[in-house]
Image 1 (cartoon, one colour):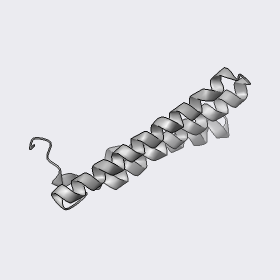
Image 2 (cartoon, rainbow, N blue to C red):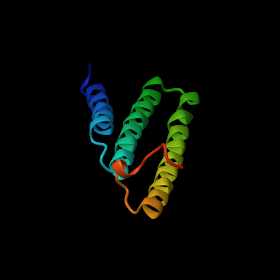
Image 3 (tube, one colour):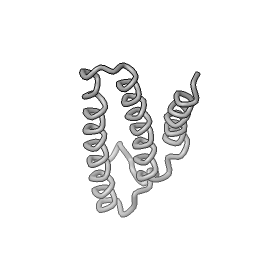
Length: 98
């Protein structure tokens, strides 16, 4: 495994572990999701550069666009929960209540 692949894999796994184990605030969960998306974007970009194929160069940009949409939706949910519940902590959110 090359150092580049190791770095990308460890960045993705650190984001996933942060998402799984550090779920106290909604903003920290969103940051972990963004770290995972950034690692995937870098991996796809390097993969398309290694292949030297012009058809594969649109995949990283498409994933970056979906990542921006995911981030904006997450921040909108954070603002909405902070307004309704008064806090952005995950313990305050109860999915069984409407």
